[in-house]
Image 1 (cartoon, rainbow, N blue to C red):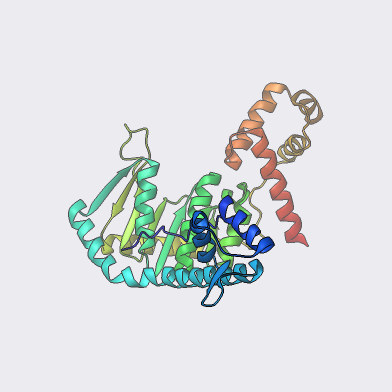
Image 2 (cartoon, one colour):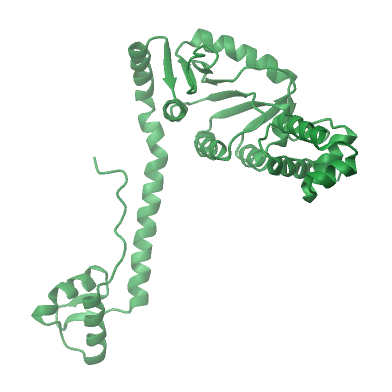
Length: 327
């Protein structure tokens, strides 16, 4: 099989080839024996053509370039068509591989570390054919995690896979979440939030489930995930997902406010957004610096962020979302 990463070579015209083209355009004639390598390059690029009577004849670069561009576009279209057919061509083998993997690893696979977990998740999701159910209880997602998930999830949606995701209510304040949700829902995903405790899990085609193992391997500092290769367990978890889904709220519900804030908390957030110094902000709110530090720390936990800057950004996004909802 040809290397799947093979692409047409970059178009580079050597100095010798340019010099030959310039000379032939100015003086006419034919390439000398020393110029044969340059002549072959020009010929391969369509800048020289063979004429039975005249030998090599110059070709208009605009015409030659247009033909070459058309050829590349044709190749690109063919490669895209072939790429789109890969999933269907490989699909009959997925069940065989998954069965083999399950037999080799047992009913439950253990994967340690974000890289290993991401690799296995990519494998599983690339073979998904009908449905992905996700529960994401965290209040905040790292930008790099969002980017990785977007690439993977959009590929599944383009294949016609149905995708439903439940986030915790506090995720509405996460930096970049509104943009990510807009992108995913436009592609066909359905996203909701739930103001209650629920467990993180992924259910793929109701036959495979992925659950976290951190609470089991408490002596490990790395993330741990378990892949459960059992349709019965996956179906059981899917029923739990459906119950949570019925209680959840669509992300784009205009009447949904992500957080309830006290007057003091709102004043602190406005001060942080304005860049007010801690001393001045404490004086404005009427509290001590120590009390202000505690209040800011509580707000960070409330919004699921780590810095005052992220807190101010979340507050700004929340205000914008509320303004859009009222309009």
